[in-house]
Image (cartoon, rainbow, N blue to C red; front, top):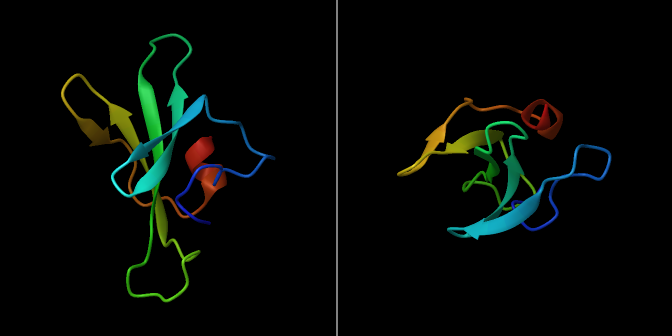
Amino acid sequence: MKNQYGFIPKRYRRPDRYRQIGIGWCAIYTHPVTGIEYHLQLWPNILSSSRSDAPHIQVLRQDKDCRRSVSERLTTIKAAVS
């Protein structure tokens, strides 16, 4: 898993779009009823030499003023997408 454009595997629900936030690409999902944006972001392991090592995934909600965490350290993309 790499926090880059297209990191969500094709077998899972596709993001509405991707956006580069900071140094990585986030998958952006928009809630169909409320229109609130949810961002899936990988948190890479900075101590690892492997670029594909991501110990957890965080789901963030785009609020009026900032992004807020709505999940703590999911370990799989499947859990984050669902």
